[in-house]
Length: 148
Image (cartoon, rainbow, N blue to C red; front, side, top):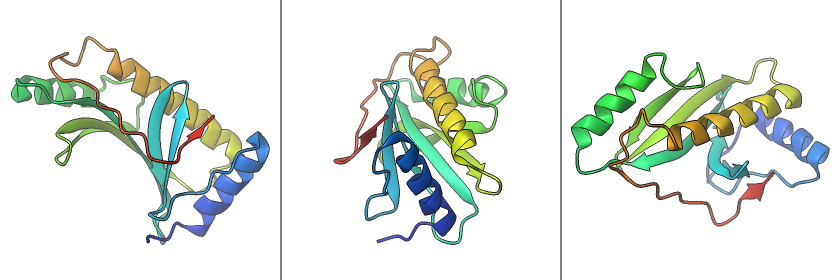
């Protein structure tokens, strides 16, 4: 079991109270949300001053080199969220959208706005012509998720 940072847990408790949902992370410290039909996970390990978000965008297809080149091109000012990046998840052979937000000064209003922007970016990338459609999307939603 991983511990989450106290600031992150308090932020989730405050946001959960505002929307009437239990936003407690799972035993591994991860909270999976579905927002505007886009699933993503967020966590903040103990001792961290950041909240980390990540979402599966699509699996790599048979032309891995083209898929990876397209992802790297998008990392250079090409995707809709300026402080996010595309990364390769070697376990699932999938491209993931990742982001880190500083907990310093983060309140529920800013977190909510960022979660909405992240969900929008996920949708834009999943349906973008900028990423080759050679791979498929195999979205894995955690056993317990919160739909907001």
